[in-house]
Amino acid sequence: MVMSLTSKQVLAVNKMIRSSPRKLNLVAAQIRGLPVHKAVQLLELSPKGVAKDVRKTLLSAIANAENNHNLDIDALKVVESSVGKAMVMKRFMPRARGRASPIHKPFSRLRIVVEEFSENGEVA
Image (cartoon, rainbow, N blue to C red):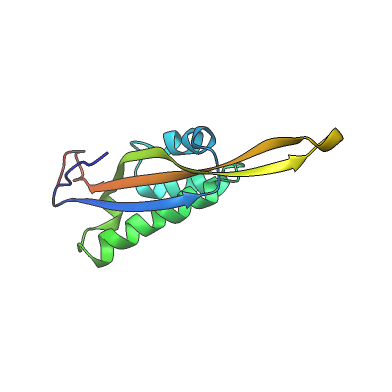
């Protein structure tokens, strides 16, 4: 999904997360629309294993906003957190009588966009 970003929006992408898109989307959906400081706190306390990868990508987006675009990190909000399917690693498990069963190990992509907002909730 190619979407043009405004001057107040910053992007961070994590391309090879070793989790299924369905499991990753459960965590990514929780942070959509939240201010970044609340999203980081929520991800730190989340029991899901994939929350570490989402937190890492979110912190990367915050660092990009601060260092590359000179935005105020206290006024950032998550406007998009989308999950996509990446490759599926295929393996085989040996079974009885010379047979084999397939094992699928899915990978996912995560795209997080943060945007700077003013105090009254409008785009700065």
